[in-house]
Length: 369
Ligand SMILES: *Cc1c(COP(=O)(O)O)cnc(C)c1O
Image 1 (cartoon, rainbow, N blue to C red):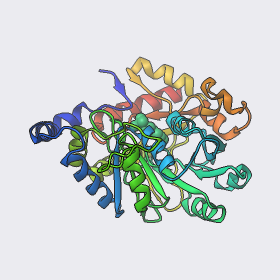
Image 2: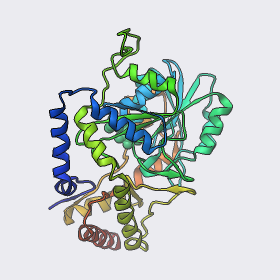
Image 3: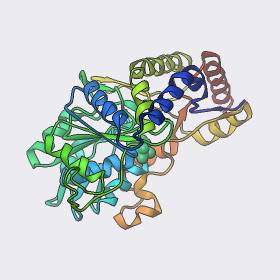
């Protein structure tokens, strides 16, 4: 059987009864859209974060789109983010008509270089989207201090950082609002698409509820533009409620897998993930680095191991973003990483014997390079 970087079938086998009960609960409720399950999940996810508001949306990309709009970002504004991220971070900024402006990432932990924010600032800058990449947080003290000094909004991209902490504070509680994805592979994953925005601000919450519901004020049916149909599905919300109770256990499982890699791969020459100061990592993807990345991936196929790269093409070099005017060479660390990083199998239900097989295969392949 091929080993992939992610798989949910073992987890499903363990949780099947509860998940099927979640589906049945919704089907029997008589309310298939924006019913009890969405509002309960919103309350519970907000409470997990110690925040007053959570608005469920249809996916993580639209969590960023609606989050930016709810914070007042408009066409023509500039939004500072990174290019070493999932393309949807940038796509979402583009979709609101704003212009993504990139800073590079740090060589040691692949996170936003906050010392480059000042160089990216113009009079059109409206917001910063720090991406808590691979499961650990950006230096948020630097981001929020800079944002306050220049009157910018901060929307945290928490799609990879459910349950991550930064100097004790949960990801998603440090900016003006935070966008989450519940895409199945994420640390808290649905059985389909889902997303949410968490905020402490009443006005932002009201904006989000209008934006996800055609731009309508719920009771009065006054359409304001922009509006979307971006509701979190009731079935996914009920599944997420059940899975939220296990989030801390999922994170613990990922940490166990990460510790085994740290022990098994310590002396191989692979650059292993490093924890930035103050970060409790949740290991969404286990990204390692080696100059012979492509040969390693190719040779592991003979062992029936299919690895992945997050991400092989920096967003600023993708043809779909050519209109942003960036060139190869503009973000040297991001570009260098894209050629050397790759991801190892990482999910809480990864069996120890499968992981040991991966570690052994990697050791053999690297020794034979
Ligand atoms: C997954 C992801 C998204 C997009 O979420 P979807 O639910 O797939 O739309 C955005 N940003 C980052 C960093 C992601 O990893």
